[in-house]
Image 1: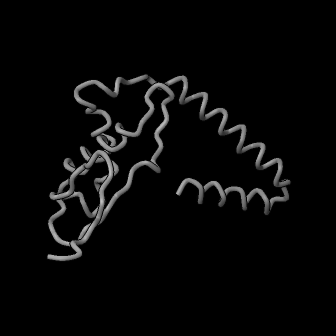
Image 2: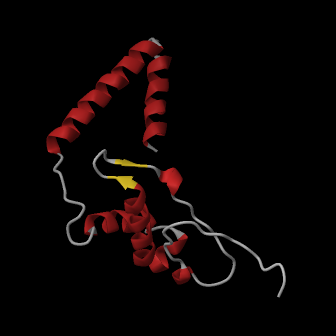
Amino acid sequence: MLAGAILNEAQKLLDKGLHPLKIADGFETACDIAVAKLDNICEEINIQKNNHEYLRKCAMTALGSKVVSACQAHYADLAVQSVLHVADLERKDVNFDLIKIVAKAGGALEDSVFIEGIVLDKDFSHP
């Protein structure tokens, strides 16, 4: 929504005859001001505190309007557990490519589990 609103305003400026580079420079300046303001008002939080409660709250907020909202807490725990297992906390980096979600037919949403390692999906070749 924000990107759409910004592009809408850019179109108005283009219609007034402003050069696209001037508009882009203005957006860049606005971005610098916004980042500086965020740096000024931010406060560092300890994600380890209270068994990663801040991370759980963030995950629950993201899951609030999803299909899984009925078991929001369970999926928030799965998300936090998954991210922490692949996160490099020293570099503040998360490689999301290392997280794989495997959907299986049958069962309920609450049956979802976190598995550390590799999942082999092998059918029996002979009873």
